[in-house]
Image 1 (cartoon, chains in turn yellow, cyan):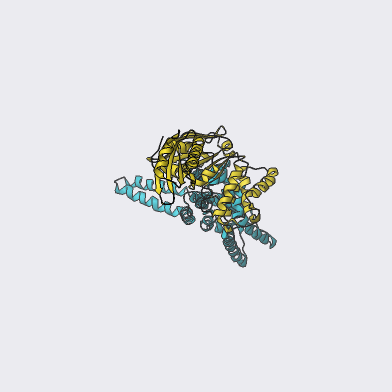
Image 2 (cartoon, chains in turn brown, yellow):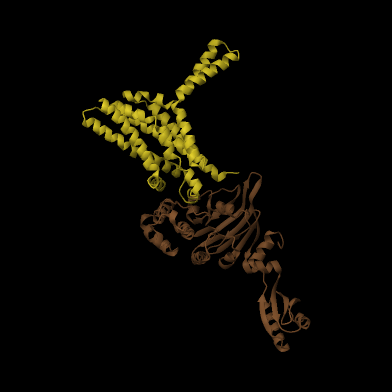
Length: 315
Length: 255
């Protein structure tokens, strides 16, 4: 568990991080989002002890990162944006060095490294120089490095940046696996990735927290309603009028109209979307207007993100 | 500490640096020994003293990458985010460079055996110069490590340590210049001739006091001066402390 309280980091006159507070619970994946220069990496660097904050505290499983740094750092595995790799070492030499740094005892070392190497799938490159590895493998070695010492918390700064789609899927799968046994803070530019992995999201903008919430609540809170797009064949105006009569419907606005089909954009009160959708289906069946498609228009994380970071829709 | 030491020491042999340093040192010591040997008058003491003047070349080579490379690669983040302390990082790195010096020095050990084998002598004075050699190596390596901490460029680090070490070798000359300058400035300001010249001499002596080579001259005569060794260790420790502060400052940096 990480408790972050009122974190401020000042660079001259500029506050890179300005009063950030949030908590990461055990075995939770927290997505950390924000545009470039929002203070994501700075915050992560402070949590891991690389930088110190101007004011505010970070507690890792109850240990303050400044007052009990060695205990706190034992709990954290950190993968910075550029993995800290010694390119002149082989993978196994490097991981051995990391074990030395983190004080992993000789007895534990073998079994722990074996487990990690299998988990991140780097057993086939163990004896190769890190300099000669592909970017995907380097990233995996970076994750392996973070896992050494069995930390309960993983902090991953843009772990999939610069990887090809296959590698991204594999790393994502790996992170999902790890989330069963670790608390994870993950930052990323790829919003769909966060959507897939994270339980909760913290969005920061210009050094301040813009939103903290679960993803579904976040989209609902922003719009206050759920939207669906109905595509069908039939008279648009009649249909819109009849649909407006269903209870729970806020509005029904015609969209694109074609000779073959019509579209309605329907806003539903977020309380009972399933019931309302059933009513729509029954109505359309009764009137003999075949539904071609009924699609949710809930804002994607991209829209939520753009809304929040551009200053709109802040609550 | 051991982790850092082991990595740094082995990394000398993962790149050409360790081999280059050993090659230069072996060539120089071999050449000096050969010259003495062919004259039929081998003195290990003067060989070691001659080797001291090459600190200025060898120390920058072996210390330039110690911390600057970490910064460039981004691996310094490991020192801050793992339970290892910065103090241990600094000590581990110094030990690695120092150990490389010990390895290089094995060449001179061979010369000692050859000398004794051919009926030459290895006296207390020669032993004294070796003691001084290692204390100086420690001091200069600390200076080199400091130069490596203040930049992320190996070249700049090498140049800075080269200049500092060169300065220590020329310090007695500089002391004379500075003394003369102070003397003439003082007299041009209207201070009495006698006072001005004694001011010049005082400044000259103060600067010359810093000369590590003059301080340790007596060792070759078999006179072990503890104060000289304390001086070398103090300067070394001072630069280690400065290095430590530079590393620590990074965390608190406000710019």
